[in-house]
Each structure stands twice: as C-alpha cells, then as structure tokens.
Image (cartoon, rainbow, N blue to C red; front, side):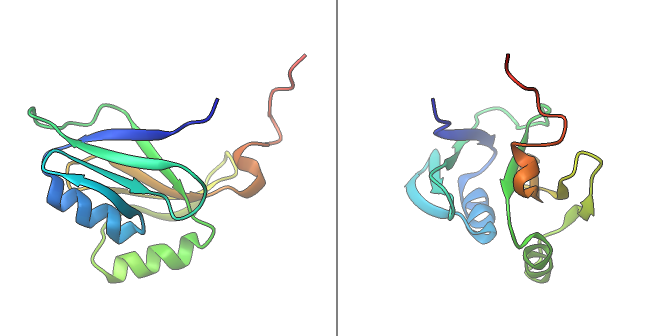
Length: 126
C-alpha cells in the first residue's frame, strides 16, 4: 500500500494555489473547485478542494519534508510567508517550522532524515 495524496478543504482556490506553488509544489490539475499538486521529491501528490462551508482548524497538520529546511524557511519568509514557528529542534528528533495556509490549515515544514521512519523508539514487529 502507498499513500497517494492528501486533500484539504480551502475557502478559495486561487489563494491556495498561489500559496502551495510558492512552497514549491507543482500544479498538475486545476479547476474552479479543485487543484492538485505534485511534490517536487518522491511520488506523493497533494490537493485542495473548495469547501462550501467555512474552513476551520480540525486538528489536521500537513507535513512536507525539506532537506534544506532552514534555507527554505528564510527564502519563504523573504517572500512574505509568515511562520507561527521558525525552525526548531523537537524532542522527537525532527526539526520543524509551522505556518498556516490562506484558509487556516496548519502546515509543518520539517526535516527528520532517518528519524522520520526509524526513530530510536521505533516499534519492532514480532
């Protein structure tokens, strides 16, 4: 099994498209109610769909791994992106920065390296 994509609700398509393209995602599908992006690394995709109801925080956080996290956050900040958390080392061995998309969805840009799938506390299958 492989994760294909994650889709989040947005209030408006155009600002969402600009936001995610600015993060570095490549737009591959666009309609008045939907946009799909290809991640620049790997095989995953990410999409947004227009919600008829106001979008509110539902506890979902979308994570995008960036090997160049600190440099990317500096570049995005220079382009006007506002981060609620600048890169910092977390106790779970990931370095994370956080921001909100135009609809209020929480986005985490992070770097975890081998700790993403193999932290010291990884469960060993019997």
